[in-house]
Length: 418
Image (cartoon, rainbow, N blue to C red):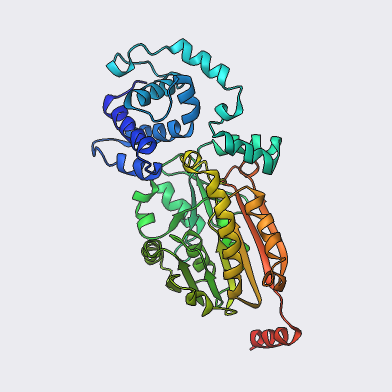
């Protein structure tokens, strides 16, 4: 086990871009992996995992290395040397790693790991917020779980294949998977692999989607032939799952503020064979008004802090600011109030986030139900999913039903019989 200069230099460049130039880790990693075509899978694995590890433990490593932001290249090398010592790599005699104090690093690690903000490598404000909202015991378990690397979960595209067929196809490619209990379409990879290079992916047999994210579309209780609106579709992971559950029958309207995201969704939908999707950019309030009381089902996958998905976005720990969370709560309340009007009487709405904070979740729903429009809804059920309990991402989802008069109910039942 030894360090290779070209791989380590690529890692240092990547960390510099993430820490000092504000770039997103996933984009930097994707770019770094294309740097040398001669690299094998173990080389790419080293680069990707090392970047993510140092981003994940940035605060702890910086404290051990005794460096402060903004980090110059020497600082980043010192943080890298901490990572290498703690991972048991022999330190090569490179100029940048001269005089690495191995015993001191191990001693400081043991000492600093007694402080939670350093041990879990999070900002003080995030720790305080987590304790305030979830309580000391639950938060300690949750943030520890959020620091574990995310597993790769596939969602079978049932428009094209079955879970059993997909598993067999991947087995032929030496990609081993396991079924997940209570998850009808999910497969979990036994070992990480670049599944995006497989023909099975190019043919649209699966999407990569966290196990708990796969629960949201099912929670919406969609049926083939319905009119369904996904109001915050983004690049469309949940939209595509809804299309599969609808068996391509009925109308699925995917909406978003950003045209670029809907373009991505179009490409994915084409690959997946999902052809009952209409795309609408929310560029004026008219787009929403035209749909008032028209949909059988509405999904509001609301913008949120993302504090349920830190295991797959570790750089969010450093990019998030407390003001953002205060602002996003206001956005969530507005989105719930405006988009809920799309649900027709007797129809259902799911409000979902990938956050674990009650203030973004059940408290938002409770507040909504007291508003003028909210009083027209009944609360059916909700689900709070924490990473330390499930082993996957943290999520929240609430199912609400719009009230209908006895006359409206009679008409709807009659229509269903016809």
